[in-house]
Length: 250
Image (cartoon, rainbow, N blue to C red; front, side):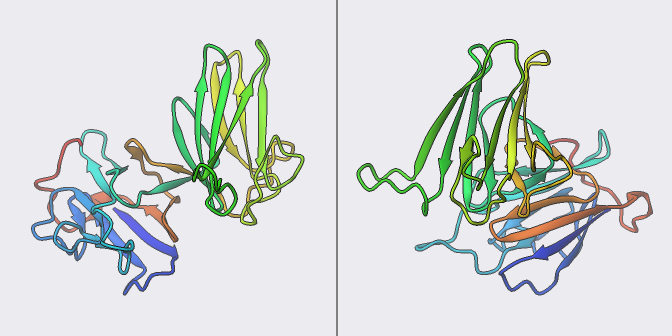
């Protein structure tokens, strides 16, 4: 069983705590919803969990935005974005970067890619308030870092002007996060907080876009736009409903 708790929001939810069993969401809005999927969005016909008042200028965002599902093969819950409308971002302490990845820090979004053969790190920084280029209408800046061969390399990111990647975003911590490449392990990680003091985390967190199915663990935190969630995992063996019609994978 999962307990889904809304920890902060600017939307008018009627309740702040929800229960998800292996066969679906308790009191789902979706008809015949006991199939092991819980869809999140703003369409009452197709979604179990409804975000009130989320609209763009002309129409509703496409829905559902993302889903949580139960996999009977390993008996774990997973979360996955549908790549429609608003997506879920997972709060991380550290995360391995294997390919292009979208990261949210403060009001800024980073698209990170890495050439493992030539050790070239490319970061695109998106922030309408900071990087609006009036000539090209582009709202991003691109930074390139070339790492030295046979050495571990670090890129510090934050609001401190001495950072390797300085971003003038007041929602960032001075030493918000860092990217580190371990040459011998051939691994690239993004880590929340100050590299020189691992006990200091960023104030507003480092968030990764859930581009692939991500296994849910207890105290899992994620957000959608300005709504933040926390998940508490419990033993699902005590549930009082039958686990019929549950999907076996996505």
